[in-house]
Image (cartoon, rainbow, N blue to C red):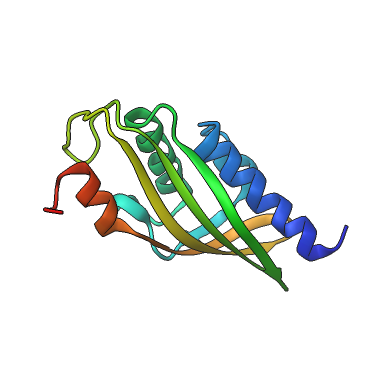
Length: 139
């Protein structure tokens, strides 16, 4: 297996573990101790614990939350992921009580890996669409 393929497998396993299966231990398995999240979602901290918090928050609010991978591209120590995540809004999130709506969140992540672990993440999520679906922002 090439380095690019190995890095893609790490990213896929991390996303599947944390966001699709809701395994908060995926943070310990796939993120380096010095992990830095350059674009932390939902106001969480920029470290491993922030990523664990984001995963736990989404699982609590959307018990069926899952991430659908559209593309995974690797070059050197970088892996780019294009995805759409989503689930049924069954619990409070960002002050919004459960609506029962199916919510989707498209996005793109760039991960940098070192020695088989993720050390950095840059990402763009469609936050505005997410907030509109929750009813926080007018459609």
